[in-house]
Length: 260
Length: 311
Ligand SMILES: Nc1ncnc2c1ncn2[C@@H]1O[C@H](COP(=O)(O)OP(=O)(O)O)[C@@H](O)[C@H]1O
Ligand SMILES: [Mg+2]
Image (cartoon, each protein chain N blue to C red):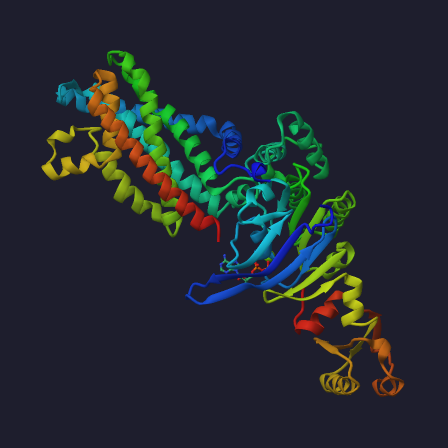
């Protein structure tokens, strides 16, 4: 009988969860895509050209190029953490969708894998749009840029799972305000997106190394301006570590909330 | 194989921690066999532990004590295997409102791993079960309550499961939709699907269930076919006496002295096992136009055994 047992982790349930996401996405893709691509583009134009005209160069880059690459990482953060938090919370608490899914041959970790990977692939790909816009505004093309989606998806996996974890921690949907202000905003500011981390006081520079987004920013920038293999391997490792830690916390949190 | 029970529960206990830290025992030492191929009813008032029992069968709730098997699979160790061959219709509607009728069914055909070749046929069949063949493209938000419930049931049947769990399938429905669903449940059973249905409607259990368990406070207080339960605990018929409170108290005292069970509902005293009323008592009770005789039902059984009403 042992061989008839279903395996611990299977792709079929993950694909099932994706089917559901795809059906929902078909309905909302226009508004989702609009928000995900137009917003970072506005940031890019406002900061890149607004500040850029004042700053000229920063850390050896044209400011518009500096910001253009930084915004890619910012987009990876927001397009994954927000759906991770809000969609997951709404579906669990208000729509009871996960109760329905878990009554089928899908286990909690497969549900989390399906939700997070969908968000990450979608968010990771959308966050490359600002890079295309930056190219139009004169960012020199580079072969390394083809690796950018890999970095953004990897980053987005971590932040999507972070969002899923947070959705199991907050007592109510309004509590996400604390997460946004207390966690996401500092992450987004102290990552070298709008200004270089090097200019910060020593303690903040050290803190930045514990910021997953900082590692994403560095990778995207290096993809555009030249890799530094060893350092970049370290950045990839840091993002992978972050994603792994978030995976453990997200699955544990969801199991605690969904299985009583 | 066919003789193995579809579901077994042995001394199953489930406790919840309340907000103030105290424990609620939602299911309290439940032992039950549901034979394969029957429609089995779990009958009990709100809070009896019916939904908790159902959730333990899918491992969405984990028992603190006891052993459970579903279609031969120990739960929770092999719950995924069990979930693959059973269908669940939950008490709370959790359809995807933004998706269409067909999309809801397609998503679950995927989740239940219906093979690609059979998927379209399975979805079409489920549409027929839901009687929604004429509106596959309608979004669920735009369906009536009855249509939603039929879709919820059909969604749990999309993979032709061997066992179906129906948690209060007809609660809050109008009589027409309820009758539709009763027809559907009876048809499922006739095709050989095992049905475990929870309900607090007496009539539902009496009409549909081959066997039923009366639940109260997390325990089974009696179990058997509806007919046997009624015959054994409530007898053949019931005499309902209407009258002012002091007259009712008097009747209760007389009947109790004769050793027959009674139940009080508002301005009525019901005398159970009325066929055993001795002639002397009958004279004392009188036989005016304020007395109605009716057949005993499961509600009477429930009241006799627990002192509470089901509905
Ligand atoms: N998640 C939970 N947390 C705390 N108490 C619960 C939970 N689920 C059910 N209960 C309690 O367990 C008891 C049985 O509930 P339930 O199984 O839903 O009964 P029924 O379905 O028969 O109405 C009730 O007292 C209910 O309040
Ligand atoms: Mg219930």
